[in-house]
Image (cartoon, rainbow, N blue to C red; front, side):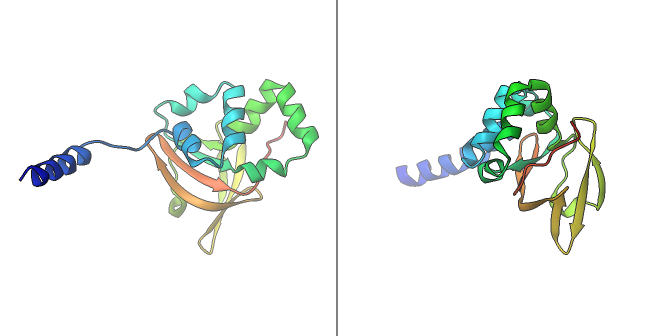
Length: 153
Protein backbone atom coordinates (compact mmCIF):
# COMPACT_ATOMS: atom_id res chain seq x y z
CA UNK A 1 0.00 0.00 0.00
CA UNK A 2 2.79 2.43 0.95
CA UNK A 3 4.67 1.65 -2.29
CA UNK A 4 1.58 2.23 -4.42
CA UNK A 5 0.89 5.53 -2.64
CA UNK A 6 4.50 6.66 -3.03
CA UNK A 7 4.56 5.73 -6.71
CA UNK A 8 1.30 7.62 -7.33
CA UNK A 9 2.55 10.64 -5.36
CA UNK A 10 5.81 10.75 -7.33
CA UNK A 11 3.99 10.41 -10.64
CA UNK A 12 1.54 13.20 -9.83
CA UNK A 13 4.11 15.61 -8.42
CA UNK A 14 6.62 15.08 -11.22
CA UNK A 15 3.90 15.62 -13.81
CA UNK A 16 3.16 19.07 -12.38
CA UNK A 17 6.73 20.37 -12.74
CA UNK A 18 8.55 21.38 -15.88
CA UNK A 19 12.16 20.32 -16.15
CA UNK A 20 12.95 22.37 -19.28
CA UNK A 21 15.75 24.94 -19.05
CA UNK A 22 16.67 28.18 -20.76
CA UNK A 23 19.05 28.31 -23.72
CA UNK A 24 22.20 28.83 -21.64
CA UNK A 25 21.46 26.04 -19.15
CA UNK A 26 20.51 23.68 -21.99
CA UNK A 27 23.78 24.42 -23.80
CA UNK A 28 25.79 23.88 -20.62
CA UNK A 29 24.02 20.58 -19.91
CA UNK A 30 24.64 19.32 -23.46
CA UNK A 31 28.39 19.38 -22.89
CA UNK A 32 29.28 19.96 -26.56
CA UNK A 33 29.06 23.76 -26.44
CA UNK A 34 31.86 24.60 -23.97
CA UNK A 35 33.47 27.10 -26.35
CA UNK A 36 30.16 28.76 -27.18
CA UNK A 37 29.18 29.06 -23.53
CA UNK A 38 32.57 30.51 -22.55
CA UNK A 39 32.32 33.08 -25.36
CA UNK A 40 28.73 33.97 -24.39
CA UNK A 41 30.01 34.63 -20.86
CA UNK A 42 32.96 36.69 -22.16
CA UNK A 43 30.62 38.78 -24.32
CA UNK A 44 28.22 39.45 -21.45
CA UNK A 45 25.30 37.73 -23.19
CA UNK A 46 24.31 35.23 -20.48
CA UNK A 47 21.52 37.37 -19.02
CA UNK A 48 20.16 38.09 -22.50
CA UNK A 49 20.01 34.39 -23.44
CA UNK A 50 18.44 33.55 -20.08
CA UNK A 51 15.71 36.17 -20.56
CA UNK A 52 12.19 35.43 -21.78
CA UNK A 53 13.07 35.54 -25.48
CA UNK A 54 11.94 33.82 -27.55
CA UNK A 55 15.18 33.06 -29.36
CA UNK A 56 16.41 30.65 -31.97
CA UNK A 57 20.10 29.93 -31.50
CA UNK A 58 22.12 28.33 -34.26
CA UNK A 59 24.72 26.85 -31.93
CA UNK A 60 28.14 25.82 -33.24
CA UNK A 61 29.65 22.83 -31.47
CA UNK A 62 33.13 22.81 -29.96
CA UNK A 63 34.29 21.02 -33.13
CA UNK A 64 32.88 23.85 -35.24
CA UNK A 65 34.81 26.43 -33.23
CA UNK A 66 37.97 24.32 -33.59
CA UNK A 67 37.76 24.91 -37.37
CA UNK A 68 37.96 28.70 -36.95
CA UNK A 69 41.48 30.00 -37.63
CA UNK A 70 43.41 30.86 -34.46
CA UNK A 71 44.00 34.40 -35.72
CA UNK A 72 40.24 34.97 -35.99
CA UNK A 73 39.60 33.58 -32.51
CA UNK A 74 42.41 35.75 -31.09
CA UNK A 75 40.96 38.82 -32.81
CA UNK A 76 37.51 38.09 -31.34
CA UNK A 77 38.95 37.51 -27.87
CA UNK A 78 40.68 40.90 -28.06
CA UNK A 79 37.60 42.76 -29.32
CA UNK A 80 34.44 42.30 -27.21
CA UNK A 81 32.26 44.27 -29.66
CA UNK A 82 33.21 42.03 -32.59
CA UNK A 83 32.78 38.92 -30.42
CA UNK A 84 29.30 40.08 -29.48
CA UNK A 85 28.52 40.78 -33.16
CA UNK A 86 29.56 37.25 -34.15
CA UNK A 87 27.61 35.59 -31.34
CA UNK A 88 24.43 37.60 -31.90
CA UNK A 89 24.65 36.74 -35.60
CA UNK A 90 23.87 33.17 -34.51
CA UNK A 91 20.60 34.28 -32.84
CA UNK A 92 17.19 35.07 -34.33
CA UNK A 93 14.75 36.94 -32.11
CA UNK A 94 11.90 34.44 -32.52
CA UNK A 95 11.31 30.75 -31.92
CA UNK A 96 11.67 29.04 -35.30
CA UNK A 97 11.38 25.27 -35.44
CA UNK A 98 13.17 23.52 -38.31
CA UNK A 99 9.92 22.61 -40.06
CA UNK A 100 9.01 26.32 -40.14
CA UNK A 101 12.27 27.50 -41.76
CA UNK A 102 11.73 29.16 -45.12
CA UNK A 103 14.50 29.79 -47.62
CA UNK A 104 15.52 33.43 -47.54
CA UNK A 105 17.06 36.05 -45.30
CA UNK A 106 16.60 35.89 -41.53
CA UNK A 107 17.27 39.00 -39.49
CA UNK A 108 19.62 38.14 -36.65
CA UNK A 109 19.84 39.83 -33.26
CA UNK A 110 22.99 41.70 -34.38
CA UNK A 111 20.90 43.44 -37.08
CA UNK A 112 22.38 41.70 -40.12
CA UNK A 113 20.57 39.03 -42.11
CA UNK A 114 21.80 35.48 -42.46
CA UNK A 115 20.76 33.28 -45.38
CA UNK A 116 18.48 30.41 -44.40
CA UNK A 117 18.05 27.49 -46.76
CA UNK A 118 15.45 24.77 -46.34
CA UNK A 119 15.67 22.05 -48.96
CA UNK A 120 14.87 18.35 -48.92
CA UNK A 121 14.29 18.31 -45.18
CA UNK A 122 17.69 19.88 -44.50
CA UNK A 123 18.31 23.32 -43.05
CA UNK A 124 21.33 25.56 -43.48
CA UNK A 125 22.24 29.01 -42.21
CA UNK A 126 24.78 30.69 -44.46
CA UNK A 127 27.19 27.79 -45.17
CA UNK A 128 26.59 25.89 -41.91
CA UNK A 129 24.46 22.76 -41.80
CA UNK A 130 21.95 22.16 -39.05
CA UNK A 131 23.06 18.76 -37.77
CA UNK A 132 20.55 18.51 -34.93
CA UNK A 133 17.37 20.55 -34.85
CA UNK A 134 14.64 21.56 -32.46
CA UNK A 135 16.23 21.32 -29.02
CA UNK A 136 13.40 22.96 -27.11
CA UNK A 137 14.17 25.39 -24.29
CA UNK A 138 11.96 27.47 -22.01
CA UNK A 139 12.83 30.60 -23.95
CA UNK A 140 13.26 29.29 -27.47
CA UNK A 141 15.01 26.61 -29.47
CA UNK A 142 18.56 25.53 -30.31
CA UNK A 143 19.62 24.18 -33.69
CA UNK A 144 23.11 22.64 -33.65
CA UNK A 145 25.31 23.70 -36.57
CA UNK A 146 28.59 22.32 -37.89
CA UNK A 147 30.35 25.64 -38.55
CA UNK A 148 30.70 29.10 -37.08
CA UNK A 149 28.98 31.69 -39.25
CA UNK A 150 30.53 35.15 -39.50
CA UNK A 151 28.77 38.44 -40.17
CA UNK A 152 30.36 41.39 -41.90
CA UNK A 153 32.61 42.90 -39.24
